[in-house]
Image 1 (cartoon, rainbow, N blue to C red):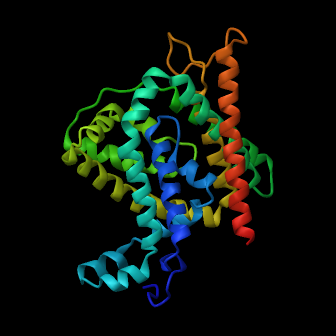
Image 2 (cartoon, helix red, strand yellow; image 1 turned 90 degrees about the vertical axis):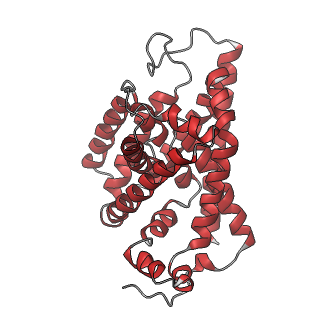
Image 3 (cartoon, rainbow, N blue to C red; image 1 turned 135 degrees about the vertical axis):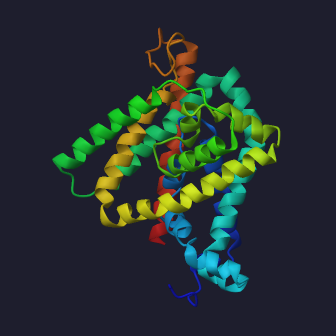
Length: 304
């Protein structure tokens, strides 16, 4: 059993970091709502991805054993609860307050939403590429293969599935794994499972029974998957980062602002250099600039 006497730095109260984590949670929550964008991508952009994985990994059998023994003080010393709680609060706040807005905007102004997130993810690809060391033919091939796989997944047609408790549970377990990975959209996995509108409607209508079942599935799925992901990042970081890069590249298919009206997720080029086209390019540029700025701020924090 790991020592619980060591005070985790994340448990030392820091008001500035608290608000920073809430802000990061809001960004992740907003990203997770939109099909095609991953909360894991936002965590990577904001420079908290590794901390997030390491923190979730600590919620293990030791944590459960301490909770069952009602040793709450030891639990708070064992896990970075302030980091996780502030991040979760930001995500919850974002989902509750932005779900209806994003749902409406995706219906009325989809091009604007997709343009912004396209810029975010495109710039994120560049930041992840910089994190890959020791380039080789294998790395390039892995990026190409994962790009093709992601591109195919994004283009898959949504399925009609049951609204039963067991399937809601399963959907949560599967979707959360996608949400934690940069490049795979948990929301779009829900689209493929035929549960995106159902869960979004449950959020907006405050259907707590459905949401509880979904969150239980998500919690169990995350606790299981995050350990494998952490091991891959530690033992095979370059391979893992190359696959994640490919997944992000493939996901750009869904985010491309110009899509065929006849075939969903079929990117096309704009017909002319119109005012709308210039606006879209401008919004994409804003998304790219935001990522590069956030990445620079994150690097400056690490250096200090």
